[in-house]
Amino acid sequence: MFTRTDAVRCLLVVLGFASLPAASDPLGLYIGAGAGQAQVKADVISFDRHHAGWKVLAGLRPIPIVGAELEYVDFGHPSVGFPSGYAADSSAQATGAFGLLYLPLPLPVLDIYLKAGIARVRSSVATNGQGCTAPGAPLPCQGFAYGAQGTRFAGGAGVQLNFAPLALRAEFEQFSSDIGNPNLVSLALTWRF
Image (cartoon, rainbow, N blue to C red; front, side, top):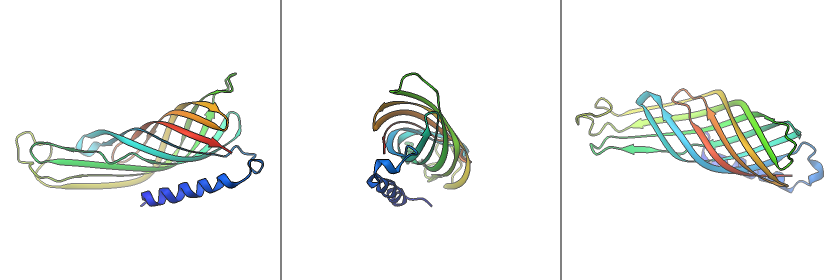
């Protein structure tokens, strides 16, 4: 399973590329990080909560209208508790590879783009089952835990303001998962070499 320690290691490897001279990067290599509002779902128990999420990314843009990106996203670990003692929590992380298509605009400071690709999403959901005998309890009287991982479609769209070599992005991404389809609305900063 990909842990936060693994994410930090990936970020350090990506940041290692920062020491390369700009002339050695004819492909438009960039790195970035962002944070925002994630929505984590677990359809099996009708769990749907918002939580803070974050991501790190590395990409390249060899020509103005086409790019590619690798990304790690952590959607957070939202939970919910009820007065009866019943509680549920869920988590999701994704590692993805995307192709990006930038709309050709006459404004060099602004980019609008679409992205599509595949992502390996790891999701889990658990309940404690306590207090489930109370009237109106959402589940039968027992704890429940379920986890899944799989590689499926992911996509999104965004707007980017360029202040070379920095860029500011606002982006929406949706990921397919066996448990529920998590998404992330984020602001990110990227740095182009």
